[in-house]
Image (cartoon, rainbow, N blue to C red; front, side, top):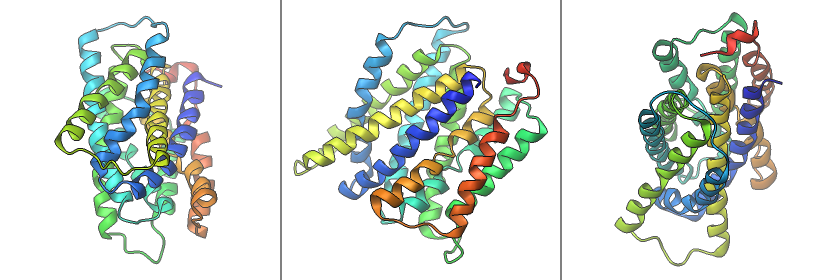
Length: 291
């Protein structure tokens, strides 16, 4: 198994858990900004873990790599706040999670002209199939496609899509470890700004604090694994849509943990997503993984 594929699959699992935990957090904390700020508690141990790891050699402008990583983190924070807002409106996690996973469309549309990436025919079919699968996950026949929550979900899609491109670009200058550290470090001033501007309620339970920490931890860990995938030679236009298939994990978890149900369309979407993973990982030759 290619290294970038291993790390991409690890991201799918980690973000699948994050998506379900985020629903629980959004239901417990009314303010989307506070959800983002408090979940930063779980980011800190990941930063410490990464800091203790040995640095890998990298070429390019370190300052540029750090700037791109910091920028991607800030954009991600804004997308997370928008995401918590949608979840807090009472919409099912089994619906919100997959529709926001459409963000790779933005990454792919930007990566092909900006990074000059090229895809083979099987990979193009895989991207199309993954988007079809995400559509099946999210647009049940008894809902209006332009519902209010769906329009709100467009904001995290755009922001996360830009974030994915910036993350990939940062690994062209610095190692995945350094990129992940600076990406996550940007969460700290954002959290401080939110808390200082409006102190969170002191009535939160220990369970809420624990869930918040786990939300931050799984998000941070998933961002490290996707950066490892980028740094291992994978293309942003392949890794981004593959990592966005985390609903394959989150939907079964939402059914088991939250008592939600899925339709036949969402079941078909899961099968399509699994097929898309195989197609996206297909390489004509070893050199085709270069960016």
